[in-house]
Structure formats: structure tokens, C-alpha cells
Image (cartoon, rainbow, N blue to C red; front, side, top):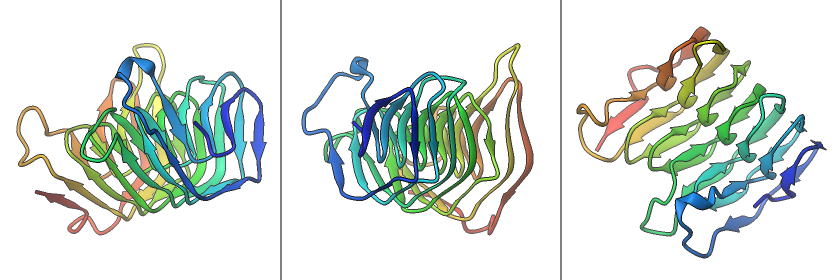
Length: 220
């Protein structure tokens, strides 16, 4: 589900979306549903540029303020802003894990992006991306992030490289807040960070900044 396009392999430019976008039925997680303020899923060499969303989104798995899922390393989101409010699952449930202020699940390049608003999810929750195997550059978030479980970060819930492919977060900062509501840190829920919840394999943080580090994180 997308505010403008459900599935894109082309270019979406200078677009603005507001309104409510909801999944009204319960689906198994195997349906791999994607909900985005502007695009549900990007594939191939798709581009989203110079666009804005302040939608209210209730998704089932991959939920993002601009894009639910970017499923290609060739895709690009750039020069865009989201002030969307994100909620995963039906009221009182948490159906899916990936929630990001810009994109829920990402394999592409994220450049010159900003997010605000409120992002509530279960796990893999981030101000820019819930889960990313692609780079994040020149971006920031002032989002209010609330998560029930692990892999939670001010910019990315999880940033993953591979044994042969590097990944990076550079020239970016977070000035929002992170609240974890599942109880105190323990072995199963300790992957919570001001910038990135989990940084894995060939992943690099460069010139990334956490502002107000004494005030950003709360455990309830």
C-alpha cells in the first residue's frame, strides 16, 4: 500500500502525501506486506526524490514514512522528508517487525533525508530505517521512537553488511528520543542504541552524531 504508488520500478518526484493508510485485516507475516506514505514497495532502479509525507500509517510488516520496502540495491531515496506517524499492526497487536521514519526495510541508497513524527513498533525500529543493508548518508531524525522489543536505533534499528559488501552510515545525526517499553535490558533485548541498534559485519559509522546523549533513551 502506498499513498501514491503501491509498487514502483520507475521515478516518483516532487510528491506530497497526507491522510490515513491502514491495513484493516489481520494477515500472516508471510504475506510480506509493505505500507509507505508515498510508495509501498520499490524495486529495480526505482527513485523517490524531493517528496514529503505527513501521513498516518498503520502497517502489517514493512512500514515507512515514505516507503514500506526498498527491495533493490539499485533503488534510491533522496532529498525527502517525512513527518509521518507510524504504527505497526492492529490496535493492541504487533504484527510485523520493520518500521522506519523513511523506510521500513531497505536495500537501496538513502541520501539527504529527514524524519520527524512518531514511530511505534515491535522490533527493527529506526528514525530513518528499521532495517537496512544499504547506506545512509547526510540524513537526520528528530523522531519519537517507541519500541517493545530489540533492534532499536535513533537512525537505524539494524544496519547489516555482508562478508563481501560493506555498508555505512555517514554525516548523519539523531536528536529525537528512544523509549523501550518491554522492560529492562537483558540478553534478549539489549540491542538498543542512540544511532543504531545493531551494527553487523562490514558496517561503518562515520561522522555520525547523537545530540543530547543524556536525554534520548528511556526504559519502561
